[in-house]
Amino acid sequence: MQGRRGLYFRTKRLFDAATAALGLVVTAPLMALVALAVLVVLGRPVLFVQTRAGRHGRPFRLYKFRTMTDAVDAEGRPLPDDRRLTRLGAFLRWTSLDELPQLWNILVGDMSFVGPRPLPVSYLPLYTPEQARRHAVRPSLTGWAQIHGRNRLSWEERFRLDVWYVDHACWRLDLRILARTLGLVLRGEGVSPEGRVTSEPFRGSSPERLLAAEELDPRLPERRP
Image (cartoon, rainbow, N blue to C red):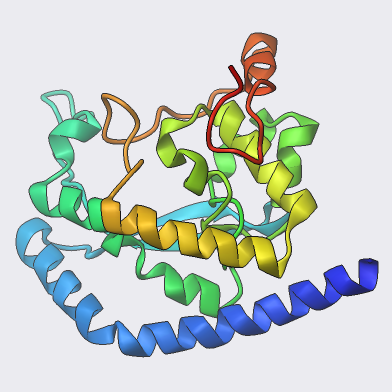
């Protein structure tokens, strides 16, 4: 079993690198158009760059197309996300075009196509030991949590699904996730939490929230009745 799992991860890395390289070539004209649109509407920088936690918690620089302005209030504090998100930015998020630069992250080995989503390094001290197991694999563009609610899940539910993926990762599961992700992207589902344009920051899990997350069956998109 261990040998089969090791073979899976080796072939997965080859698939990621080859597919990301091809994706960068094929989408280069599209990315050039998106970059030009961002430059015209938002100005420089075109890319949003942030340090995220990778495999085993190692930091790496994640790249996305910028979707928000740098507008601040009278005291120099950034305005709320919903006031900084532009129409172009909302479109890029709805279509997931803002994620295209992460093909580079996949090519160089920072990320994979399937796995847990990469999160800020500031979250690392806040995870429970069980939640921290999500970092046993490379972070990714899409994952088990993304096809079961994406940003509309609570943090505890997302982490539970991430850990379930770590324990069950295989080619059959990855292909299932990729197929489901394509449908979600085409429909633009789950991009934003209910009533917000971005997720609330993770501030740690209370015992009550962890207990509530236990009610989510990680194999199904529905909650248990």
